[in-house]
Length: 382
Ligand code: SF4
Image 1 (tube, rainbow, N blue to C red):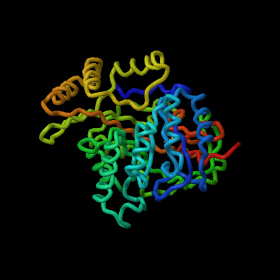
Image 2: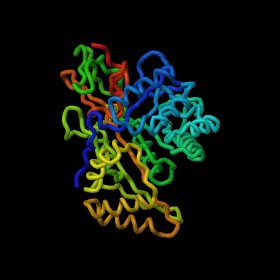
Image 3: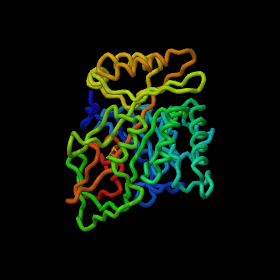
Image 4: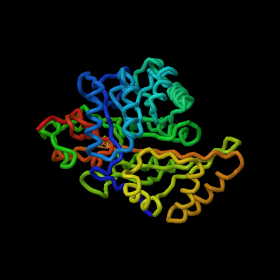
């Protein structure tokens, strides 16, 4: 069966992003934050959440920045999100994460903390010229510290064309040993080159003046075909996707679901699952049964085994899934699910139109309006 298109349209999108501030304590090459510093008071965050909830049947909200941990009321914000019946995820560079902050966030009810640590960052907890091993060690320590506080750890990572070795190692380490169930991969895009834009999420965005469009080659930007080929070489095959705003056959968000088994002797067996009839039916029934779709989904190992079996029987990879189940039943074997999400950067066509992810599942709020988080700082009022 082919890759499943997620039936996320309009209010049926289970996720949104609340950016809490524009301020950061490190500097990253691919950052899309463009405006001068600002910070949202708690009441505004609450109002923005109300506004987002009136437009989407949310399941999960991601709290971002700038750097989310610089918001002095982050625990209260998490608590508020949870009190509205939603899951709360935080995206952070992790510089300020310590045991005290993690304990406070755990008490507030945070579900997932995604850390963004990679080469091409200037940060105080790494040497000025870090080696890849320094970065990996810091990332591993940070993920373990989050897991030790009973919080699900995740990874946020920006893909640069000239850093594919780092990406390959990250993918393989995540599948084999890192305690991270969720990985967000964002393709690098030089946002400084984007012109000012006007429009809306439903009608699309256009550049205000076509003479502002500058598209020089940038060594960090990778072509999607080249990236997909690289991922295929690592046995990545997409499970589902979100279409483009302009063409429902064009994939903009690629979701990958892996089952990974670790044996007692340290060896591994892993498989990228293929979507089957089971998932297509389940995702359509969910809003009817539970009022909304799920976004962060983490089954326990027995439920996951059952899903793998049903997936095999309803059009998934029959032989592969059975082999996987066989591995997972061996003595001492540990089965885990690993979720990867690849976000393709928005593209500007020659006539100034922006191609982005349909209805933007990562949309944020500005003056009550939903806008793609990656473009929000470039959008000007009509
Ligand atoms: S359009 Fe939305 S989902 Fe797509 S890359 Fe931009 S922020 Fe992410």
